[in-house]
Length: 395
Image: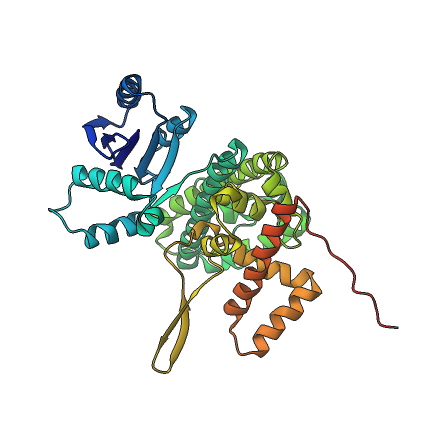
């Protein structure tokens, strides 16, 4: 029994076909628990008529289709992801009426029927393996962490710009605006102008401020001045400082949860054994990869991680571009590889060799990253950790 699902934001178009490709019924379900129950009820009714295993192809797996995709796997059905780009190419090869959700479902069911006979159809439908629950949790936690980090960067930039506008001398007393003591100092008073009149005892009562920072603040207080905008911009700065402190607390809590979960994930533990790949980077990669069963070879994994850039050449211009299949969230490997270079002499030598060949920094890093993907593939295949071996000195 073959089932095709065109995923929408609020409702999904569903089609059920028999083994010979004949469409048995089409219907629409809302994105709700009642809709999901109706989905499974109709499939089970068809299975009672003819006892057959069920395979489901979804357009937009792991997007608006959540949690229906998880429920499908829990039912024991085989789940396929429909590659939207290749489905569009298939639609162009076999042109039909204008695009509608119902027509998309029929095309998906046609692909199902042709999957074993037409190479293009096989490429469009990709079986979704079961991912260990711990890696699913790591994906959700690390994505949440990344969102909070990006928000923190935006708020800090905004706060710095406001401070630069109303009191640049206040900003200059710290090397970094996201220092905990500085943020606590800014948020200690609702009126920013009162910071210039705080006594030393009040300053020392703020966590993180000792005699050293209290002295720096008192030096600033002697000539503290604010622009006229402080009356309405000051509360914005205080609000931003409080938000940054909240974000730092949330990120720290996520870091602790991620570290504990990483101990349960074999994939995260293996990646963490590679020098330069910290626990957060390893957890992010483990969450985005999910399972190596998704990939037919290490080359497809390298493509997914962005370690296989495509050549881009026109006239005198020679460059590269990222394929569309790259998971942009998994590009954390690029920064991890850069740290890896500093810790492993052999990797540093490989990087320098690529630079000597005329490659730019990012190209050399990706070349090394491509090599590390092969290493990761072997590590998981052979169930081994990364090993640093000392090169014997020639006698």
